[in-house]
Image (tube, rainbow, N blue to C red; front, side):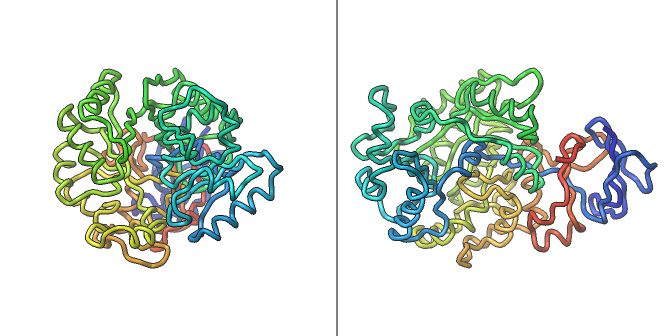
Length: 454
């Protein structure tokens, strides 16, 4: 299709028209000739569509049918949320709860959940996504035998057991169309799914959702093992994901071997790295096995000052989630030593040192709205108003840029609105300077992927 977007601001120049043909930007100028399909931009900025460089699509889709724990800070509120959820379902039904933290009601066990939900199959996920706790009815429903290494039947805990749980529960995959539509409303045109559990089956379901238009965004998929891109380009293959857990860190030689295995597949490596210990191990492994452009530190939850130079020397990209400062900042302030708070989810100091940085959501573990992430990168304040690492704040234009890179080169290849570029675009309802004064997804007027409004 051919489409003209009239009267838009492009890279600071107002009053321009943008002609789109065959999925690409064909021409930018003033008073371009009329065509059959036109959009009135009304003076708004036209920018590249945003990319979420680290998201979990099936988890975000499943969240719609889950109980969430936003606003829960006490054991009584936690119990009340469970009671309300079980009251809405028949006895024996599964109840899925997301976002638990020990500050709510302490360390969860099977017995504690039995008291809260004696007649339902209850499973509660920790906010990190690494741990599920199940009650007795839920454990019984899983059957016996073939237990994964992370399953503790006595306590009901399952560490990193998502894939195994899915096979035992047998639930139908959640619909992806609402996720695609929601992200399109935010101006998001590209996604990198960072799930280590992605295999050929999961990748096939995501590819089919893309082909059907349920997930219109361009997809890049990480995986823990080999993965092949389909001939039609329904998704691109991203880095090999290495998942680290502070309580059971892998051996350095094993880690270096995984990096070598990724290289044998012609792929880069992305490491789940939240704590200082995980970062130290990651830097050592990349130092041993070799690192280069395209290798990534996911999260960078804690980056001590002396690690910044090593990140730069190794050429590693940090894919961060500034929204955690807003959403979890009050908890960080209460539980992290004051001298360590500046190390949390760094941004400005990394950019100043020449470390590539990209923005992302880690949804469903934080909001999928990139504009809230942009605001958090600027303000560096918790939901309760506490300042967290204000020295890491960046201006709004820089924060937006974190979401405008090519998914194949986050932090290293900024996309532009220019002739010849793919027409993956976000139209705002006002000039960019005005929108960035108060970043909000409500300022998104239209989203186009390959030149088609989605």
